[in-house]
Image (cartoon, rainbow over all chains, first blue to last red):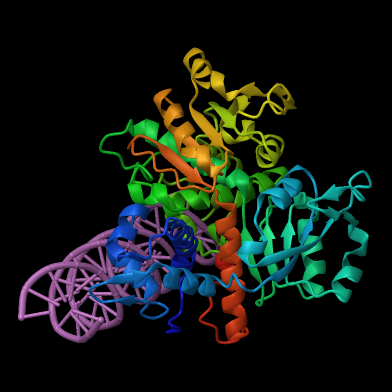
Length: 231
Length: 231
DNA sequence: TAGATTGTTAATCGATTAACAATC
DNA sequence: TAGATTGTTAATCGATTAACAATC
């Protein structure tokens, strides 16, 4: 447990997939898996999986493979899912509301404790069992309750400014859905951007490339099983 | 124009950011930009930008830099945004509805032409100016109208099956929001997965790593400006 | 012409794959 | 013991960075 080699971002981005698949194995009552089997299912190579898992230390057993529940727990631990970071969400429009209802915060290491908006028509309404608060009270709220992370579902005009405020209140994690690249100048902040429009353009680009070469001996970005399966 | 070197996925994922930033420059009436200036703003290196743009052919001019509107048009072209691919959306729950309203399909190369659900309470309601149809009529619809792409906002239980149906109807692009790794076994399909829960776990992981090392001489996944800014 | 900045090649760095000895 | 499969090192591949000649 814990080898403390630096974990590269490439590895981190693969961990949730391992997590999901191990959960599935577990619920199917499967208690043992080899890197080979995992690789086949996930569309990667056994070599990569062993390499990845060894960033943290040998969880497996030669000649046997990996113990599913144990590996699952280890990966949950590395992901930090037992943390229950407190989070607030800003911007309860269509997207904000969908995220509140659709995302499983609790099992992913977060607890959504309050949601804010600036629109008087939205303030006071219900969302995910909470009452939407006035963003004017944001600072006050953050001073009375420790807030670890913020989910930004704001229009891009206000994103940077609100983020700065949040930073001043001690928020250090940002899940950013606004069409804006947060550039908190601070070094001690973690940002995860979800740019839906960018994602859609990427799809458009790949579809277009694909057509150009019309399948076949493509110089195409990603017909491979691996990339399809991963992010 | 068009050098037809294979475009790597790393480059493709950076193009939308270039696109966004050039659009901003354009609306600010700036007509000229150097790789240096672009790099500073985007938190990358000038070298990388020049390298990226040269996958397609020299858009710049020595001693001058890049012509903003021209570069913008070239990148739009590479992204294929002029394509107007037809798309349908499956699953008009919270998330589906948010995507319909929040995502700018038209300017990203797609035209959303129909939306479907299987829930009788949802069928017949309005969403983004369209009437939600019964998914039972999906095949028929695809036979009468060519559908290039599908947006999947379904529960993971039905995602694979619906995707298979869509494939049989000729759909070759998938924007997948279901918590499921589509594994269309077919080689001629392009899939872009948006796994929100995975993204959230990634954030959790990075926040946790960060804490462990408590800032400072971290072996941490990404306090760097570059990674913060990009996906 | 002098200055700026590209296009492009070479050097470096990191991530993936292959191979195999260690060991259950 | 024989077979299986890991942990780990070495080889390959790709992506990023550095450097500089070409040229506007």
